[in-house]
Image (cartoon, rainbow, N blue to C red; front, top):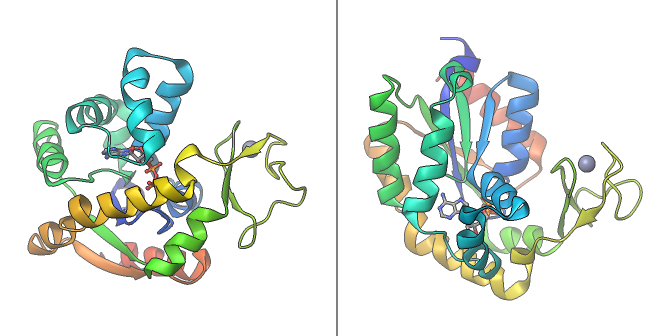
Length: 220
Ligand code: ADP
Ligand code: ZN
């Protein structure tokens, strides 16, 4: 099985590094990167019906209702490029989404190969989310201390403007971490029962985590 045929989920709390690592997995290993957060932010930016429904939840740090997210991801999974394998970032986040994903994949004669659980201490999560910025043009992720851009406020990759996400405010961070504990953390058991789960230490730097991921893909 070639690595880029693999169907992979990145599981982990907000701030665990799912987005950053998924982008590296796409760039260096050729996976299609599927981020429900990016898809929803795109819908909000374009002002679609779906975006209007999702925006309020997102700004407060709450989960968007399952049917909306399952709809958007389900449609994306039908595109031909996904047959080659993909890395899911930010989905599933509830048991209902995990069950829906199995149904969608079964319908497409596909199945999951691997679920990587990005383990990160809570104080690290909070530090990362608090200082995070993102490029409004290309989506690249920075951090004022951990991954500063060369020019403050300006993207190294494309010159775009960096902004702080509405849901990276302190109050929203707390809501997101609670949603993770109450709804998403149980997926660790869900996937370990399937024998698909592997742990990755995501509490240090991205390179360390990426090395573990690359190794996990090789013997997984
Ligand atoms: P993070 O993992 O850092 O919270 P994301 O970009 O993955 O960031 O998600 C941002 C927001 O988008 C979430 O707080 C939530 O409101 C919404 N969202 C993304 N994916 C899902 C999902 N699978 N289910 C419900 N809401 C989601
Ligand atoms: Zn950029």
